[in-house]
Length: 191
Image (cartoon, rainbow, N blue to C red):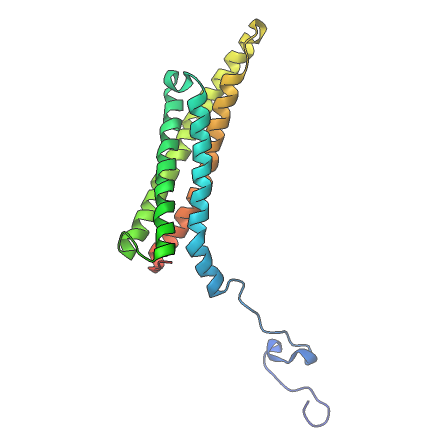
């Protein structure tokens, strides 16, 4: 306090000490360490999720006997999920090798570019294949409803729907991973 019991004169109330009604200084929400951890492990975790969803989708579609042969849309889902599973597995192996040994297969800029382009392409394939299969599933359900009187089961549409849903779910982690890869590429960071 100033002599005479007056509060100190400050232009900005946020600069006042807390005992005089000022606000404490703001702390950043994301620290540098948390950002680096997100960049380092975020893509690995997201690609692992995409791998799991892709393998489930591939397995369900492959076990749906004869359906992916009869409909091109389901063959597209099957192919996209196989490509997604192979890509995410190889990326996870590459990144795990880098984190454990410190040796990268590519130069830093090339590695970021491979991550970004690969994530974009595989995410597009997953989303477009799931979108292509959705109308066919609706038509199969209509046929199954019509054949219900004859004792047909709904196994074909249920399995196709589950496989397509898993392919759609695999898209989201890869889309987020592509954003992280794009950030790494634009800031020229490699962690």
